Structures are given as structure tokens and as C-alpha cells.
Length: 186
Image (tube, rainbow, N blue to C red):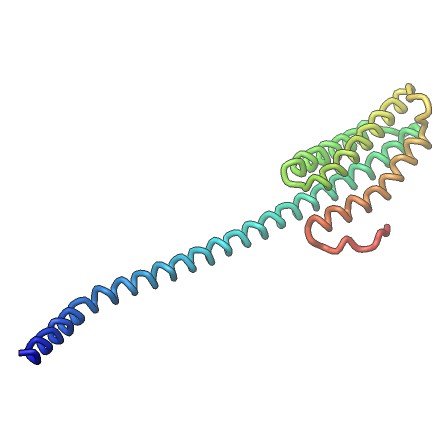
């Protein structure tokens, strides 16, 4: 009888194993699929973050291009207008051109306030203040009521000095975008 009990126990274990194998394999398969799904999800999240960073850098790059262009154009237009005021040849069209470029610069500055890094924004703030001061002094000069010590030559010198400051800001913009700032040059 001993052998019969052993055979019966063996048969019970074999039948139980056969019946439980699909259930256990299903659980193992479910665990593997869950882990695989989680890995895919982490990979998709990482890809999304990379795409977001690229989009953010591209948005800042476009903003910096617009700001760079707007500020440079405004500075040049202000220098031209200052020269016309100095020669006594300022016209309504020249003033309208100056106002158009000034508004474009302010639009570029408004966009930069939303996306620029703190370092770049600090430089843009300083440039804006300097340009606003030069604009105001130029208008006072045109009206024949210049601020003491701010004749044509001083305003022109201040606008020319902005070129040096511009190189610093350009370097900050490039560094913020992960581009080599390059040598300080014209």
C-alpha cells in the first residue's frame, strides 16, 4: 500500500502541477508585460522631455534672434535720427521710422521677458534703459532743450558704447543656448 500511496501522491502532484502551470505562467507573463510597459512608458516620458527641451531652446533661439535684430535695428535707427537732429534735417518720416523700430524693439523685449534666461533678461533690461535714455535725450536735443551735459557728442558716444555691451549680451544669449560664445569681436 505504501507504493500505492506514493503513486497516488505523485499523481496528485502531477495533476496539480498541470492545472496550476497555466495560472502561474499567466502571472509571470503579466508581471513581465507590466515591467515592459513601465519601461516603454519611462522611455516615452524621457523622449517627451527631450522634445520639450529642444522646443524650449528653439523658442528661446527664435526670441533671441528677434531681440537681437530689433535692438540692433533700433540702435542704428536712433543713431541715424540723432545725426539728422544734429544736422537739423529731422523729418516726420524719419521720426515715423524711428517710432516703428522702437515699437518693434519693445515687442521683441516683451517676448524676451517671457522666455529669456535671467542673465539675458538683465542685459536686455539694461540695454532698454540705455536706449530709452538716449531716445529721450535725442528728443530733448531736437526740441532745443537738451539735458545739461548731453549734447550730440555725448549721446552719440553712449550709443556707440552700446556696441561693446552688445557683444557681451550676444555672448550671454549664445551661452544660454548652449553655443560657444565665441571671441569678443565686432
